[in-house]
Length: 98
Image 1 (cartoon, rainbow, N blue to C red):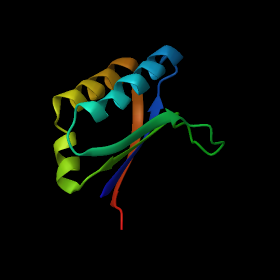
Image 2: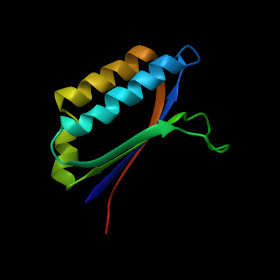
Image 3: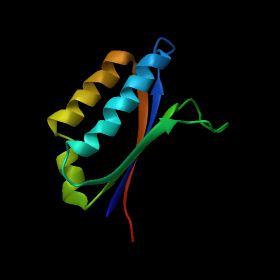
Image 4: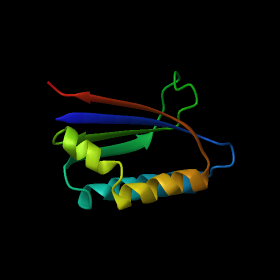
């Protein structure tokens, strides 16, 4: 299995409603993209957030599933929405679960 972690930082103009819509759309990917075992996303409440407001974890069956996720049209719609609402930066970590 593979764990995919994403931390997202937004511009000051990004609204709470836009962030909530992002979460709603992202969680729906589990029903659309093959190979997703679990997907979780929510608001970061850590005092050590360094400005990263939303965290995402996606657990995949294997590396091939992760590779297929990136270019999948449903995922690309999320990427476009992120750009539209003012995503400023991301940190991405992928690792195999032993």
